[in-house]
Length: 192
Image (tube, rainbow, N blue to C red):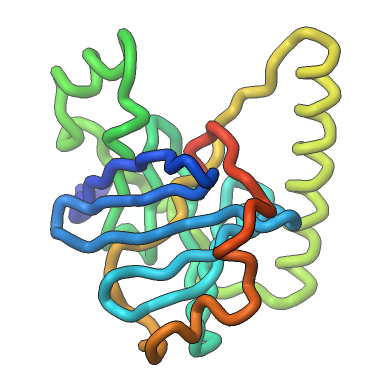
């Protein structure tokens, strides 16, 4: 069992449907979900990219320079990145009774096992298989919600909080990518 470095953050839903993510380290991200389910983001340190939820709760993060890294949503608003080096903790998702329990025991009591690590790399074929798995699960969940029983609503947090990645000059992240439009909206799950 590993006790990774914790990176807490909070999400705030903005009036335009995008999300402003604030990390306790001072890093900030602005995030918007595209129509295809991917989340486009940019931060206050010049990094930008997309996050995509794949099957098996794996999150693919592609930086603007093409670098790819993977995370895994392990529940309770936590996403593990790398081989357990860091875990993102969504403090805005700790509501109700579960929030009281988690706050009382603290994250230190919640360790990470090697079985929870995301893959180091995936082939395009493996990614596509996981993508198809996630699409099937999403369709099944939306069908269940329409029938009166909700899905689990448990997505990934996305983002590794490292602030690393390709620097983007000026407003390059805004060129024709839908940030200024209302397309893509936001959902109430943790993935983003």
